[in-house]
Amino acid sequence: MIESKEKLPRILLAAGASGSGKTLITCGLLQALKNRGLKIASFKCGPDYIDPMFHSRVIGAKSRNLDTFFTSGKRTRYLLGKDAADCDIAVMEGVMGFYDGVGGTTVRASAYDLAKETDTPVIFIVNSKGMSVSLAAYIKGFLEYKKDSRIRGVIFNQMSPMLYPRMKRLVEEEAGVRVLGYVPKVEDCVIESRHLGLVLPDEIPELQNRLRVLAGILEETLDLEGILTLAQEAEELEIPTDLADEEEAFRYQVGSEDEACEVLSSRTSEKRTVRIGVASDEAFCFFYEDNFRLLREMGAELVFFSPIHDSTLPEKLDGLLLCGGYPELNGKALEDNERLRKEIAFAISQGMPCMAECGGFMYLHEEMEDMDGRFYRMAGVIPGRAFRTPKLTRFGYITLEQKEPVLGDNELGPVPAHEFHYFDSESCGESFHAFKPQSSRGWDCIHGSDRLLLGFPHLYYYANPRIPRAFLRKCLEYRREQGAGNDI
Image 1 (tube, rainbow, N blue to C red):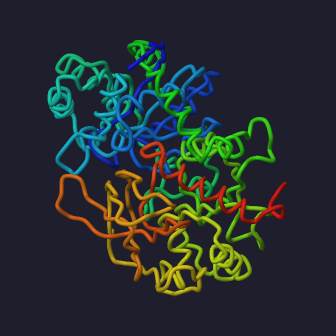
Image 2: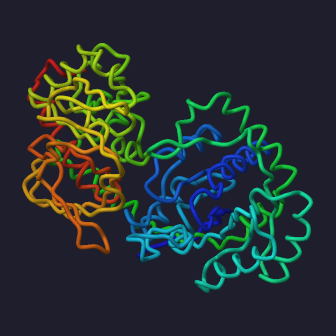
Image 3: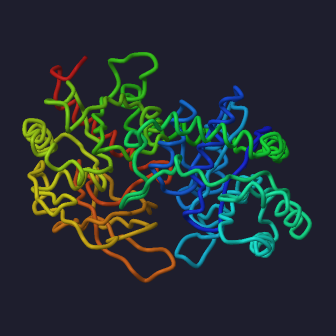
């Protein structure tokens, strides 16, 4: 393995449990750092779509995910280095409790695992409501559970300003870790939740103003200079350089040499790209930004459209990508746009390649139930109904094992993925079998065919680049079948 070492100031904000205030404090800190004129790269640990949306609204640039279930430590460091290049600081937000990982019994893919793989200093957020001296014991337990915890600082959340000086002194003396400030109770800055996590940024009135207020508070109560010093103390990041060559090789495996030149030359000739229509609106908003980047680097032009607001598909598409989101909150609006529903169904029936996951998969059913128990007509590509269940139907990481040819490939290899949904389907598909890690549980899923990959699982393309490669091959094949009528 060939590696280069680069100085990348970085921190990871973690906590002992979900609901400790990680997202709120991360967003406030990002805003405070932005107010100082710093160029920031932000990341969310784990398979989360919503928290990065909040990060992005603060820093004005796309936030990314880092997930050690999907990618090896080597590739994780590569992506961190690539996405944080030329930034003053990288800020990562942890997931769940600091040591909580795959299967509920391991630390794999936990915030601790990410800190370890990237050698990142950790700031431990403690919801201190109802605690005083016990704070020292609580923090000491996390410090000592793993000797290489990398916990180098502590922030108290929901702490009284009067109590803070005493607790800072106690914890620094008893636990031997720096205390970098506190956050008082800030009711006006709370971020609400819903069934799939936090509400979306656009649903919070005056979000930017709330974040500015929060940042103003944190500038008074956090030791920002101490936080920046801690980030600067991070060891040089060992970034694999040979992965850039591997990534380049994937770009040139879309087809034969001539085909590769045609599909991959977007930098020199717009005429030679494949155009992928991407559903994007309030119903379809769960994306990994790195998925989009990899598709573009493999030669795709992404054209965004709204299944709610647009009456027709963009012109001259070679493929469709329908990601997850909240179609169950927009059932009537999706049904009312009958023209586009029928156009999507017709395009797929005529051989247009399509990948759809979770909410996009539900949209392709004949009918879909909304959150109030009403059924609405959808695109009708998949027979049967998508319906609501009273609890999380399938939740967490999975590995997909291929059972039959999909996207023209018999051996796509193991596909790391995840599911998180309260809905189920009368027709989940049988092209793959999903295995739960650290468990004997599994199930069949995904409608796969020569040009379709449709199912509940969410995919992170860097976990298995064969999937987007196979999809783009089929898009190129479809484009050629359309002949001159699809040329630009």
